[in-house]
Length: 154
Image (cartoon, rainbow, N blue to C red; front, side, top):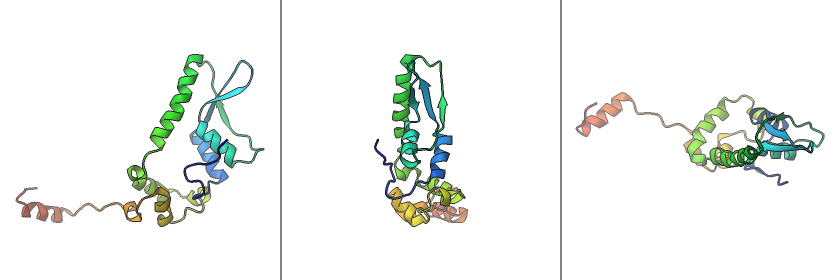
């Protein structure tokens, strides 16, 4: 199994972070007729858990049943497709929102201890640090003055 993730080598993902991922994005499995378990969704969470947790760790799963066999392939494909599509958004699209969450998240030092500054965060996201600060809206008086000088009305 390939044990890399988007930020491999840039940010350490702790066991606590992996545990949170497993709670937020559970590994969904079905039991086949042979008795073997098959992961049908949460494959990325499973890969991260296998790569980052000790071999003796009991990885939590969510077992489902009564899924028609012709739907299992669709669910698995949709999981891989949609998670890459939705979670693989360009940094520019979600950078500021991510920074606001990063700043508010008190647990961040437990989850990603080496990601401890805005500068490092900007480097990891591949964006300019200045883009991590929200633009302040112009004051109403400044906006009114700008519009008036252009002959517009507010």
